[in-house]
Length: 287
Image (cartoon, one colour):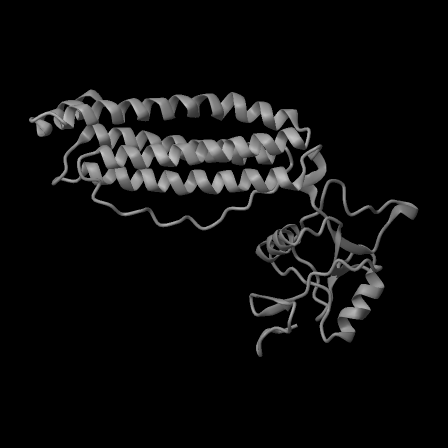
């Protein structure tokens, strides 16, 4: 139905229409009749963009079964028509060998399935939720490290060693996010990207505060990784557990140790009467 006057409670507005995603189990015919009774019709995907939206919302709302859409060839065999205007469908997103057209197996009504799940095995929703949170955290912290990197590259700061250190940290988190996205897709999961937070703006003073911030972020990353490993263990998912331990956990421990050493070394140098020289020499050591 149109969203011109706002959508009723429980509906979602998108591209000028209101959509209701229901878990009620009905035949296509009864679902179509119920939609008509409520003043609308089964969902019509006029474009690949709308089709993607239907899939996304079905996943977000945890609707695991196939869902009916307003497409059928009841009137004319093999000519698929949309409800709500009887327009012929001009584009397709058939799965595999669909539509089935051989003998008694022929089906006239169209349902939207989740074809990305055909490879999914022992990959619970809780694990996918944890991976999505890890992806978001990696992208957030990559942005934060990038902001820190550009600060030390400024002409009034001019510490290229710190700039290099935090740029590499930014790239490390970005690549981790990409690895996790690739892993999710390989397991037949559903990647859900979220908004990236604004970086914390700071003066970072003599470099120690920046290193302490980086250490804090690195520990948070490690804590979330450990939580995700715990989920994988409880859900009996050895593949996810191995993937995290082999690709991330060992490396993260090295990062935390390195930052801790840097803080200790720089603090000792700054306690000297020639703090400016100490900062300069430490920055040179990072190059």
